[in-house]
Image (cartoon, rainbow over all chains, first blue to last red; front, top):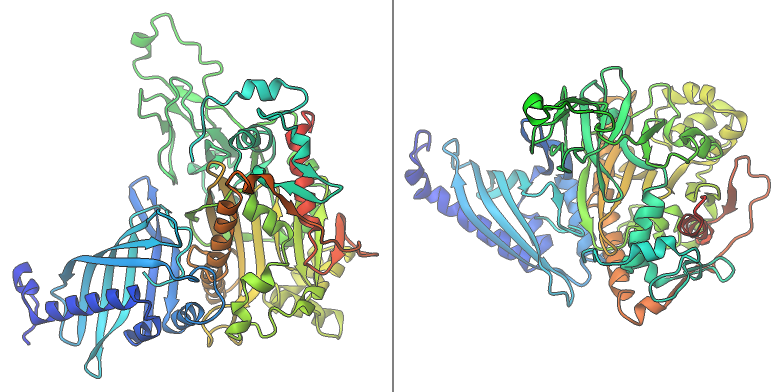
Length: 175
Length: 465
């Protein structure tokens, strides 16, 4: 594959790497919505840094990253997955019904076949128990994936949720 | 659930018997003799309106940590009950708490959450207020008020402010004792929890916030002293071998519950037995178990009295609540990264403010708190430990949120509202406890919660409280 540097948005969007990224994200969404969390761990690179920064309004616009809702390494993410995959917990017992709508996928021209930089929009809906209410979590995600033994693995993800006060009672699962 | 504006508060507030619209006297909601509380206090709109008037409008209420507004002109936007306030640092370094309601026509003057300003300009007619709330500018004044405008009383309403070891409190109550007087008995402990070090603590950043679906009193009475639920709601700690033996009731014996009747505050102190040895060794161990470095031990030894040291060496890992709604935790705790920190353990120190949002919801505000003098990598580990346990996605907080939400739903129906919460678990008072308040060894007891409710009932029914 040739370098994507200088590629137009249309060239980026029609590149095989874009298709691969889209498939990766769609497969991931399905995996998480089907609660296959331990399998999802296999998508993560060993030097993972996964953050969900807090957002507030400062005088000059949105302030991000001065606080965090989530800040995980590969190892702490493993503990999170173990907690919801068999340890006593109430947040995901019974499981939350989720649907991850992944859209607006973009591939950065700095991407190479071995290091993919991209972004997407995510709308996560959550419903627990018999309640009719849906929790909605709209976000923008920025990713860096690296190819390890032929497989794309997530090395960096930052998720910006479009709320300063989250409309979530809890969030024990990955976004 | 929104507040019904047609509720007849006048009838309630003027009724000397303090009776709810359905004829129930408020005094029947809490029975200190039977150690029970009517479940309807968690969903009743009339009770909620009274709480806004009689508790949040009268008590000293936490609004900010002073390290959030270090420089003149800094401000943060907060709430006292449902009233929006601006917490500012003025040019003389003083802290002000101002009602965020324009004296002109009621607009919200400050819409930012934080920042630095020279003055606050109301968006509606651009009236200008300084950081002490004084009205300093009225645009087109000569045109709008050709006869002149008397600015007396037109500043932003100012609350009384008190700062206790970095914690900023405010009250609208002109008759309340000073903050120092109010916390005179608790000071013995709060010095240890929040004022232990010469350079104090700092927040690691702005608060994170989320909405939990439970009445504000569910988490606050829990954090006042519910050690009982730790063994069951947070059993994952044993399941994942993060804290082996967690869930064994014997672990309760290593904890002391202390409550302060005068204020309604309660907390539970962990008795991690400091290793045997000389005083310096025990102090260094106690400091390490409290998120401090052994180098800080001499400073701690200097800053505490002999009695305070007895408590400190006995273990001050803890969780507690400052009535009505400022909770806090300070615990050696798994960092969730099994290979980080000292054997996978970090330390967390968290401020958790509960902002009431109607009878069945509240907003949680969470700040990790760290000692200013810690090395950066230790601060970072404590920040991560705090948010991996006590953020919206935290391993501890997420299960508490779910359980309390279920409790809120359960007691919301016609039958559910007619039940009682029962607090018959009690322990004898610990003889010879070196600190003020009432101390009891072991933690499944529900005495701290009864102390919370006693204070609640006093404020709800005694106009002179």
